[in-house]
Length: 155
Image (cartoon, rainbow, N blue to C red; front, side, top):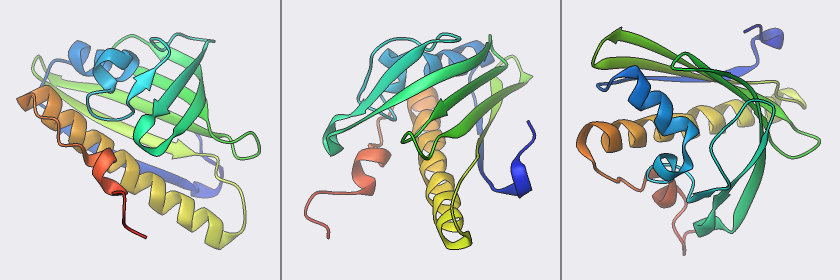
């Protein structure tokens, strides 16, 4: 994927599970809700819109799926209408029980400070998502990383 002016965020992680299992974890909200958002309106499907909800923050986001390549790649568009960005997952099986996942978020808009802030927040967010996915898929642990990133009562 070509990114404009190298303005992108990237997070990567080895997950010790078969590629099919890791891929499903990111397209099926029944699984994704165990480590990222709390509710999804349906599985990701090419050329379809899906709603993702983070109930703990009272926040929902519309996601448009552009590409689904089974066990290989997912590409979505998401964000506020004036700040749509592209998110791409690439799934690389290293062997039958190990998958390397790379998530790239690109297409940030604004001045340099705003873009730096968006890249930092996206990198941090997707790193937490991958760590949560790894803990859940490998050890059936729900670390609540996304929930605990912004705890109630913290200014």
